[in-house]
Image (cartoon, rainbow, N blue to C red; front, side, top):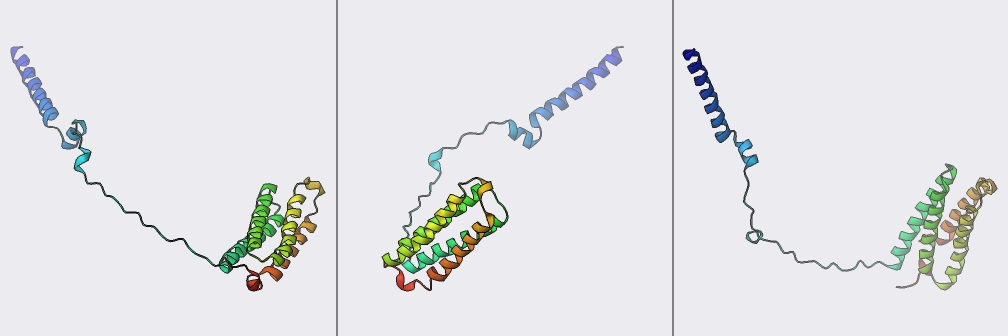
Length: 172
């Protein structure tokens, strides 16, 4: 029995030494995980100071501004025609009509007084279309609304295209 006890003691001591060596030496990533790192002082780091650059304002002519609003109006007009044909929800149609109205009023501000009066007719047409969508859906005539939208597009393109109003623009 003494021999068996010594044998177990030796085995126990070997396992204990292997355990102690593993814990103290261990693998490096495991050791790094559990060691606390010292905090770095912020003063030691160099802080970059950037000089702001002032860019000049973009100067656009009246013709460029008018063309931009006209192009946006054409996009909103084509979207409206598509939306009405696809039976989209009323909220989207009202939003599109509002965007068309904004572009037409911006175009109107860039025109002379005489041409502003004729542009007001088309702005009123957009407002009338918006009022059509205030009515319940059962009282709306989809074909009549579609024809009004097409006529509005045709008239604005015919009378207020950028190449036709070049002489009617105000100077900024």
